[in-house]
Image 1 (tube, rainbow, N blue to C red):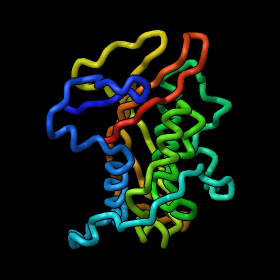
Image 2 (cartoon, one colour; image 1 turned 90 degrees about the vertical axis):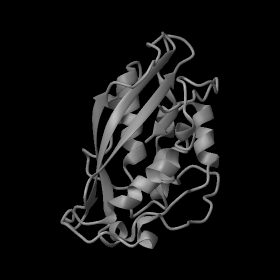
Image 3 (cartoon, helix red, strand yellow; image 1 turned 45 degrees about the vertical axis):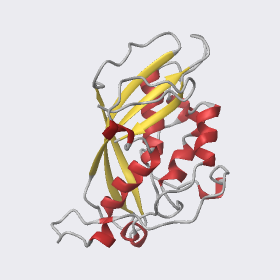
Image 4 (tube, rainbow, N blue to C red; image 1 turned 60 degrees about the horizontal axis):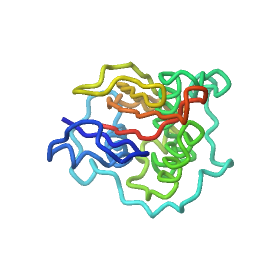
Length: 217
């Protein structure tokens, strides 16, 4: 069973096993899954071990993604902030996860850039943690060759274990993610699947929800 930590209280939301402790790296887990998206959707021989892991990348400076590197994507790829109901925890969590997984090979060094673009839906503390975190992997070269981005589809799922119910100031949501590498030249890679557990908080019920932690597996 996995353990998820609230970024505000830093207390576990569930019991955790030793195996779950090794799965705590948020962007690392996502980047490793992303590295497996580089193959075509057709059947290919298994890659050599050296090709199956994300290549090392330099430490990313602790600064938000510059406006000049915001991806130019089709209108239906990213959520429209004006249409996201900030008082709906489900809507806010879906918007944040969608942005976090919409990686673009034309602008991003790693998936951490996409995570940082979701800062508008994150608490200041969590956004700062993402800004200070070092990149953990690089975008697959096949993505770059096809100028690809990640097309995200989300399906709400029920969290496992004894997750506490929503309160007026804390909510938890879980999403199954299907990510399809989509080239601007028409290429599509094999889809990858992941699960994201999201914790949202707000100071009081009259304010909007913000993401305080995301765990990816």
